[in-house]
Length: 391
Image (tube, rainbow, N blue to C red; front, side, top):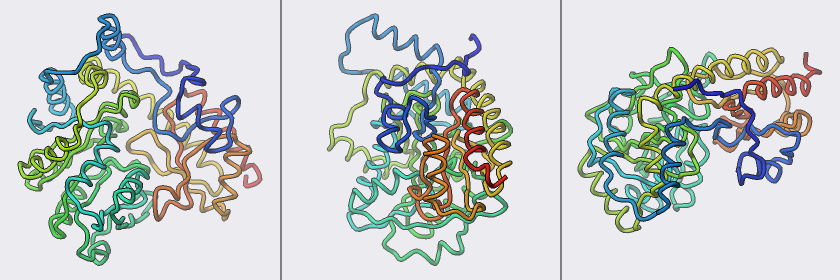
């Protein structure tokens, strides 16, 4: 495999990219001179094996219904075993239209209108959105900010349960805080779900994107006795989110039967492009690309954190996983409206607003670092200029 060129500047303007072409509408930041650091996709091409698989489909030229998923299931099994130490049975795999859809399917299959779904906040904003849209209630269990990182507090969370809760959605690794949860934390989460009769759903879409020296443990491995609904995907790892393909993997027979019934009732079937590209990605060539990617992202993280943490009042949370920097502006003493204005109007950077991630996110912005290093360096310079009066 040739070395990936993550430094290449690829023009995405006018390609129907949400990240680039919707930025001005959402944030008032023009793609002509702005830097998009909001939507969680990367400004990198996927590995050559994925591009070749897609080119093969185009060369054949017929795009019919997809059938025979043996190669696809084998690739998933190989990847999870080799990269994560997790044995996956082919009959436990469901393919959904991305993991937001997978989350919605879990809510539909395992809860009823009026139920409460537990989230550890702040957390990925789409969870709360689909919970509320489904007529369920969000039950926030606030993470504790300790020594610059998030930790769980089950003693407090036990007191917040009312009996109306039927599901817990874990984000592992954590988005937006970038935590790789320890085995002890995962075991305690499984015990918490069991104690309160909650269906445990573990969204592990970022499980391949861990910084060097960190090890992600799948919930199914950490707590093998606890029934768990696992969610994973190639889309975040390999920057193919536009395929809208994800996997819901359920070993427990009872939960698997309930999920299968909803899939059948809604007539959901996979799209052939997502299956083909995922099969190619879950390969030795894809693994080598991921290793190169995470090394590059680690250097981007180091550059960004050094520059941002040099600004008095700003603190970037140490990133163990993902490519999403979670920056706390509370030390500036500024209201969210003011520090957000400086970032968007003066630095001309679009970053996700922290309050959209739930309680505890109000003083934060989330910055996407999966972009060429020169652009990260430019963003740091702009932030330092926008907050120059603090230095």
